[in-house]
Each structure stands twice: as C-alpha cells, then as structure tokens.
Amino acid sequence: MRRNIVAGNWKMNKTLEEGLKLIEDINLNIKKIDAKNVQIIVATPFIHLAKAVEKAVSPVRISAQNCASEEKGAYTGEVSAEMLRSTGVEFVILGHSERRAYYGETDEVLAKKVDLALAYKLQPIFCIGEVLEERKAKKHFEVVKKQIENGLFHLSEKDFSKIIIAYEPVWAIGTGETATPEQAQEIHHYIRKVVADKYNDEIADNLSILYGGSMKPSNAKELVAQPDVDGGLIGGASLDADDFCRIIEAF
Ligand code: PEP
Image (tube, rainbow, N blue to C red; front, side, top):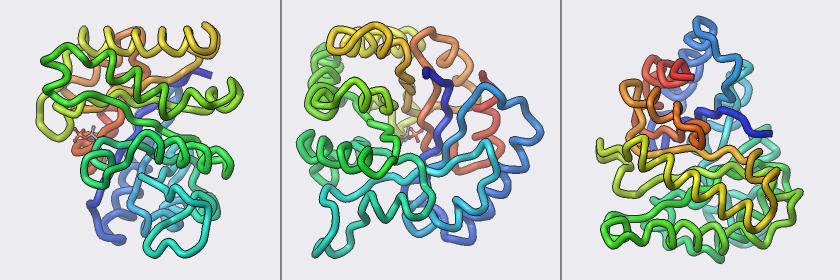
C-alpha cells in the first residue's frame, strides 16, 4: 500500500546515549502532533539498533542504514541482514549516495543486498539519484532509470511491492540546496512510470517514493504536497527532534 513516510537518516552521528535520548524526544514530540497518516522511520547507526527498537514507541519504527552483501561468514566488520532482523529492525536503507560514492557500492552489489534484505524480512528503502553534472547534462532521467533497473528490476511483483524508493539528487544532499517541488514532482512521476512500464499500474500506484535532499520544516510542506512525493528521507534535520516532528506535521 502507498503510504506517507518520513524517514530520518542519522548517518554517522550521535553516541549511544545521545541517540537514545533523541528517540525519547521523538516519542514525546510525536504524541503532541497528528501523525496518524504518516509512517515514521528512524535509521540509526548499527550500534544503536537493538536499544533503539526497545525505546521507540509506535508509530516510530527503526531502520538500519546498510547491510552486508553476503549472508554470513568471514567478512570482518560487516553486519548481515539476518543480524539486523534479529534486533527487531524492520527497514534498511540501501544504495545511499554516500555508500555509492565513498564505498564503491555498485548496482550489482546493491541488487544482492536487496535480495538479502527481503529474504530476512527487512523492507529496503532504496536510494537513487543523479549528481550535479548529470542533472546539468539532462541525464537525470536516464541515470535513475538505470539505477532502478539494475538494482530492483530482477524482483518479482510480490517482492517489488515491499520496496520503498527514495529519490535523492546528490547535489541536494547536505548542501542546503533543494530540488524545487516541480523538479521533485517531475522525476517522481517519471519513476512511477518506469515502474508501471516494468510491472503494472497497481504496483506503481502503491509504491511510496520519498524525496531526500535538504528537506527541512520550511520546505517540507510544498514538497510533500506534490502528488507523486510520498514523504521524505531526511538527513540533517532528523538530528533534532523538533525539526523532525515539524516535517512530519507537513502532512
Ligand atoms: C540524506 O542523507 O539522505 C539526506 C537527505 O540528507 P540531508 O537531508 O541532510 O540533505
């Protein structure tokens, strides 16, 4: 089912103590607002996950930010999808542009991660998006189409229907620069069409497509007002409980 989703991505921020305090603050703030029609997800660093799952009060749910591309074994420093699931986590961000750029994650590796996540009942939040040069060269449609095809289109209809897509133009992440509502709508609509062409209209209609890239309380309302923008993946503004909850209020 298509849902409105606000997902916070803490990246490599917050000690364990600070993180658990932030979850408590989010729990408290959410009680004061009307969040009935929004799914709220918080993606913490690995070390917070098990405790964050215990601390989070419904409707707040917890996500990981990555998982290993192998199932188990001699992969020092990696964390498997099965381990994540054992903490009670329900979601995992895959293919964030920082992972693609700094850790060389390719579409092929991401396709393996998607399969493992689904095998262990984690819902992938699959990130796609173009860099500035690609946008300037008007290649953004082509770029996101390839990322979706290579990372996701091997999935059956049933498995694809568990995917959440986050469109995050790389030039807007952590830069203060945001896509205009029109730019976001244009490409989200295109993404839905690409999915409809591959699968069918029902699957495309039910897909939640989030926008990510310097979303904050001051711009969230006009972004989520777009018909094909179903929510946000929020970096910087998710580190503050007030800002995060004010974004949720944008719905
Ligand atoms: C992100 O990293 O997913 C993101 C959207 O970051 P920010 O909101 O800080 O641009």
